[in-house]
Amino acid sequence: MNLKKLVGSGDKIILLTLPFLVTGLVLNILRPALFSVGGPPAALKVLSIIVLIPGVGIWLWSVVLVLVRVPRGELITGGPYALVRHPLYTSVGLLVFPWLGFLLDTWLGALVGIVLYIASRRFAPEEDKYLARTFGAAWDAYSRRVWIPWL
Image (cartoon, rainbow, N blue to C red; front, side):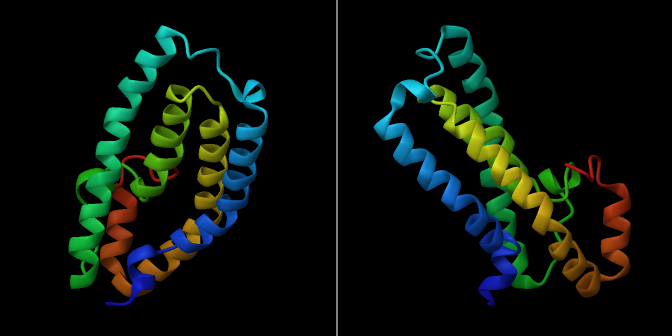
């Protein structure tokens, strides 16, 4: 199995996001007060847990679908892929990193999540073109029926 098929645009997304993560972690260790979200307050803890649970679930579900179906050469159109074209990137960037960060009393997760999401929007079109070439009409039909194609 070709590793590139499994990771899609993930390698480029990670390369763009990693410097922000590493720099942020170093700064967060050196100056934690600059990154603090205030404890976090009880309401932010509850909200973080409420968002994190489906976020991690969607991410895991997406990973399992990729690991099972991509090696078989199948286009994934069900589960979280019926909602958004790239649920793996979207869930980590918008539902996992930010809210995990808040639970750990740092807004660094939100920053890294935003950078990761922007990187995924930058590189996902390349992945979409590859999928369109590979799956043709099936990709076109899927692209038209996905609920939130821009997310």
